[in-house]
Length: 348
Image (cartoon, rainbow, N blue to C red; front, side):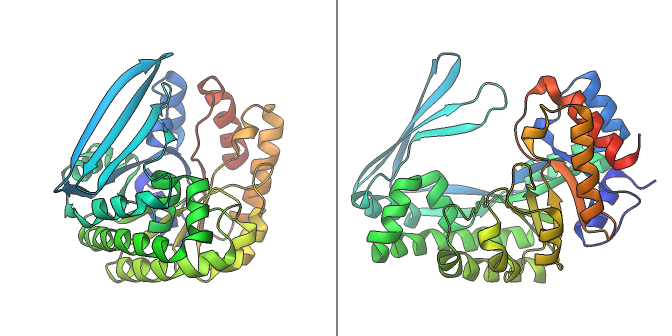
């Protein structure tokens, strides 16, 4: 039997291991008897740590925290010579997920302030957290080296939100592109740091989805940065591990045309819009790392097993295929769901 780490790394490099890896994000694995049992039976945790840190100058950042209805709320104010930006977030009490209620950039008038922030931010290597987490993980799993999502997605998800981002792309393209160029400088520095890091796998947590990103916008904003980042990482022997759990069908040809190594969090039906067979056909040169759809977790065990057997039949026999969980779920359904997954995948 391979170690868990070797099993997963073999498949991430495009090979076929002793059996299909079944994975879960480290922070989603419960510290319960069922969690420990399934981990011992082969459930492989995947952790992540940033390999960079930010240094800001000529600005002041204030953060205030409060508790509202059991959830921590944070208000962040960035004061610059050109103006002030404000963000409001809530922290989910179960998994610690961060939800943004108010984004930093709300209109085109905020662009120049946000550009000042990017232009006065420096990116430096920071490997200590990664090394410590990787050492603690050992052969039990892997730890991803994390950088920010590609710039256009970082603006969408973290800086602007969908309405302001869409307004920028459609109505203020010159100003939007100038802001994006400033952020891209920071991103390319992160890529260089990741290439020099000890991490074998670099996580691109991009969350690109065809419901927002059209093929035309993908070709304009995503493909050039993927070509650059994946080229730098591949030359350094790294694996580009990109999070794609959204609507992939509208982008399947676009995804095929970029040199990503792993399409991670790919979510098939009954939640996603592409089957495993379709994804295999569309991206024969990429590793397919599945997210077992969260809406299956509430189904009877025989339904979960039927879907998982179908996923394995369509994608598992040729290698370069991973089953996994990359989304939050009801902790009370963990044993039920993953026991069914193991029975279907391994016959146990």
